[in-house]
Image 1 (tube, one colour):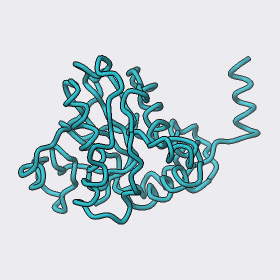
Image 2 (image 1 turned 120 degrees about the vertical axis):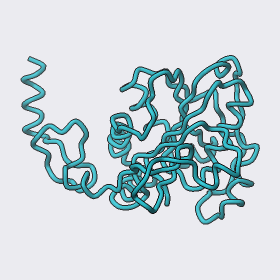
Image 3 (image 1 turned 90 degrees about the vertical axis):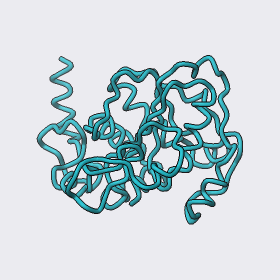
Length: 240
């Protein structure tokens, strides 16, 4: 009976691609049509083996970039699904600023199913979304990172915790700031509310876009300081 009702619903309310809106007839696992999938600039080898920066030269293997060689990174690895270009850029803007939650849920499923370069979620014990300050959360009505993280946690059966990592300082938006300004802007903005929940855990941080890495770097620093064994970062998009 359930399958019959589902079939009727699919006829009356067919699934549509969350990016272009075309009706999907092939029961795609993720509600993105093949045409839109083909337009995404997926992040592939060669990339920085630590921060995930895509290299301009498409030949060769993954290796450390200059930034990761010269600077201390508190995260062990960063991986992203695609470059911050169309159509991912439009999907993120609709989700984040227009409140189209269904778009975010689909993007979260895309993150959950994606095969990342030299990285697997196996062995990680805790998923933490990058938190918003309470004031920003009230303005937007939701934390986009929680929506993404929830889909990943469900798919991989990993505990989701959106309370222990907390943002205590209402910083100005990172958009428009340079790398050094971004780092200064978020310094000291995050705290751990219960160290016992972090101590010894292998943590995956989730965010929507990696730009300079200032926010996730500061989050990772606080997590390691409070006893996390390891911190990986997954984002939907990567600015290049």
